[in-house]
Image (cartoon, rainbow, N blue to C red; front, side, top):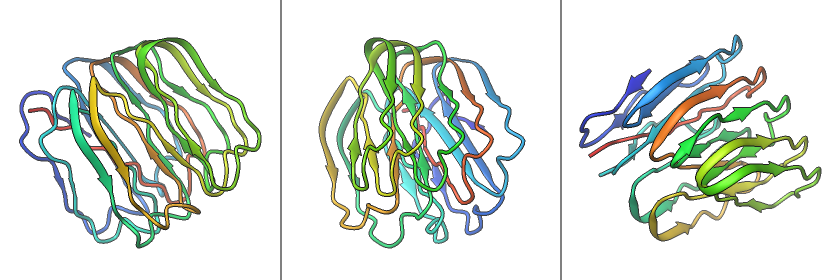
Length: 224
């Protein structure tokens, strides 16, 4: 667990053996009330969670063994010029779970028993949404799921049993995004879930017993 509140220029993760039994968590918010991780089976299946408030200078991921086991990347800045994902080697085979909350979220609940092996959960809360419900049984083999929520979300519920074998769920929540560029020829078959969390989160609750066999959820929150 790492908390980045004050002022960080860079956050560098350079661990050759994160996979198999790691939990990487990074929270960077101006103010966090509680962070609760209450899952008995997180190990052997990495979960990297991070929330970025304010402004990020750089996000550097330099780990040689992240592949084959998901890579979760998320950037949260008040203003992002570009977000470029350009990794073609083996983003995954199993899942990437990323969720970020901008503005003010009361609760973020992920309670899906079958996220693993074929799921991507992405949700953004920007404007003003009471609930965001995705309930599609056959989103497809090659889908792009995008949802944006600005401002204040009461609940975000993802209850989809078959999100897909090859889904890309991307959402960006920032006060201002210049461009979002996805230039990866082999993203399919290997989910990428990206989300951004700015502002202030009251609680972030992850309560999923089967998040996955080989997932790495990584997000870096740097505050400048």
